[in-house]
Length: 254
Image (cartoon, rainbow, N blue to C red; front, side):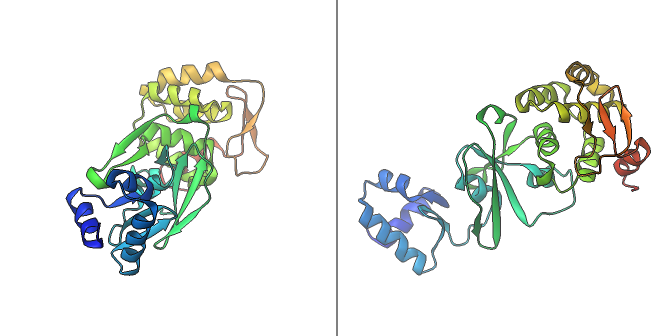
């Protein structure tokens, strides 16, 4: 197979991003031949090397597809998903990818991809966006909210989460399912408190579920705040943000 044959194959099959091992098997080529062809095409600027064994066409730059291609069983999540769902106007300088494998950061074409490892049982609430070569997995709105409350350091800030929760129509059933999968009592209490405070009528069954999970341990409402404030006995939360300030944050007045 020549380099021209290889390029023609990519074009005919509409392949923009690929693993060299899988392509080698599809084309029945030996390692030396396919490696030589691909490396020469990289030198000529037709292909770009993402990381070892993974390549894309030089003009292919879809960050969502690339990020979820690098790590198996992954999805765009956290701050990146918040932004794609229109739940925040803030942009991160990283792409956050949730995956069940341990993976170091990867830098490619000016973008840093940060991979957050989760247990397989927490991999729920995955949907797909885009189509063809531009199709990629992403956590749905409810799972994105739950994940960001679970690991707020990847969310762009607590205030952004409060606003996102306030401004979004959410499914009680999905919230319950995802909270059970993530199994973090503290975030269930925070979400239950917010649903009740914001009087979200469609989340009544979630509030009932959240109350059933309240334990005797007190957690800070704002995980990044100081260990001060009144105790909310109903939810066993230390309110280091007052209800008044939470409402101001939610309404973007803070």
